[in-house]
Every structure is written in C-alpha cells, then in structure tokens.
Length: 398
Image: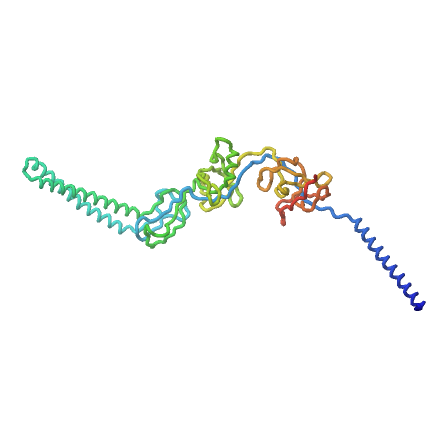
C-alpha cells in the first residue's frame, strides 16, 4: 500500500505540537512541586504555662447536705380544732415557746368534771375511813363481829382505790388541757405550718404541724469511700482519729464558711449498696446562716506539701499508664517528658519528678506538636471560651 506524502507530513506536524504541549505541562508541574517544597509549614501556636512552686495543702473533698442537729417533729397530742398559730414561720423559737393552740373548752370542761368526781371520792373515802376508825376499837373488845370489821376495812380500801382513780383521771384531764397549747421542745428554726386555723387536728393525722430544727451547731452529712477512709487514716498517722481533723465548708456560691467543723459521727460499717461510710460533721452556726436542706463542699486538709511543683491538669496526659507533658525549651522546640504525678489539687496536679520550676509546659495545643518541633508559644489563658480538654500527647522520645 502506498502512503500519501501530504498525510504523513500532517501527522508529523501534529505529533510535534503534542510533544511540545506535554513538555510544557511537565515543566509547569515540576515548577509547582518545587514551589510547594520550598514553602515550609506554618509554626503551630500553643499556650504554655510556667511550672509553679509553692506550699500546697493536701486535702480531700466531698459534697455534703446540711441538716439540723435535732429535727423536732411537732404533732398534736389531743383531738380538737386549731384556733391559733403563735409563731412566725422561719423564725427562731425558744424551747417552751407556744406554737399552736387547740380549742381548750372541751378539755376545760373535762377538768371540771374530773374535779367533781374526785370530790365525790374524797367524801366517800373520808366516810369509809371514819367508819373503820370506829369499828376497830369495838372489834378489839368483841363488841362487833369480825364480819363488820372486814366490811368496814373493805369499804375503806375500795374508797381509797376509787379516790386514786379519780385523782388519776383529774391528772389526765389536766394533761390533755395542757396539750391544747403546743410548744416547741427545743430552741431552733421553726418551719412552715402544715395546718390552718379551723383544721381538725388529731394525734393520728398523716402530716405533722411543723418541724423545729436546731441549727447551732448544724449537721452536715456526706459519704466517703473505703479508699478515702483508709487514705485519711494513713495521712493522720497512728493514734489519731478522723474526728480530730478540722473541716472547712464551701457554700454553693463558692464562698468559704468562716467557722471550721469536725467529724461527729462515722458510721460503724460500710454501706453495702454504695460502698461508702456515712459521716456526720458539726459546724458552729451562731448567726443561723446555714439551714437544713442546703448543700456544700466539705474539705479536710490532711497535710501541706512544701515546695510542690504544680501544672494544670490539662497539661498532663496519660498514655498507656505513663504520664507525659510537653515542655517548650528556650529555642521554642518541644520536648516530651515523662513525669511522676502526685495529688490533684483543684484544677492542678502536683508533679513529683520530671520538671523543674519555671519550665514552660504546653497546656493548650499538645495535639499540634511532635518531639523536636518548633512552636510559637503564648501565655495560657485558663477558662477561656471554647477551652477543650487536652488531647493525648505524642509519644516521648527514646
């Protein structure tokens, strides 16, 4: 087959243009790669904090609920209509102060009736006593029969017993009359009344009238685990009891209560459902600031760590049972160091080994760095908006 010269010339021309285009594309790609290799990655910005050294109290904390040392439940002891409330709800009341009054008229009538019955029995007793006194001399000289003496003696004893029963009835009537005036058995804060004027009260009613709580001292209940209990005992040392440790109380607004307390009761056994001991502490409350039902944080200071090194908890990362921190050196390069940690104090961690005072540790941005990498450090701003927990630290250099 014979080729056409013009066709061959056109194909050669097209090939030359295609080869030139491919060479241009290759040149552009090579140039872009060279530029990309020449542009270094940006230096990551991290937030650092200086390792602080200071004396630190070692303490343990629990959430506690406040209650009265004594909570006297006020209930009626007789049945009747409520006619008066004699206290202001929420105020301090004294022991013996009237709180409520039940209509006393029925009970006053019962007292008068009991007095009348007693008077009758007194008369009968005196008659029987005089009759026995006359019979005895006569019986001594056989002027009357033995039966007459026995009858007179029996009448005397019966009258005496009936008089005693009448006196007991009068005493009961007087007690019931006294129960119409309901008083406080303790000095404390009286709660809101749960009955209104005109309500029919009785000893069997389902709800109490009110409750009076003694709040000086106030009682704070909290639970400690078995591990915490053993740790506390170890801190205190041999011969000391948890009750000898002073306690501080922090209220829900973060303020510290000005009076220290102490452990009053440590339950005799661990609660099998929760695995904890129930503890009751007493705190002085002279101004009645603390009230039953409040919550607070109880803190027991065990010891003081002298010259302890502290870093934020977020600066420490646990990796396979080892604790690591990222330290920024003077050349702004990162060194990953293993450390030994101690107690957690608030938002900080005591470091036993691995750091020196003044070391700059990364508290924010550990996920951006690698050992030996250069960083752009800036001061750590704790509690900043959007703050997130620290990411796992990279592995330490061998």
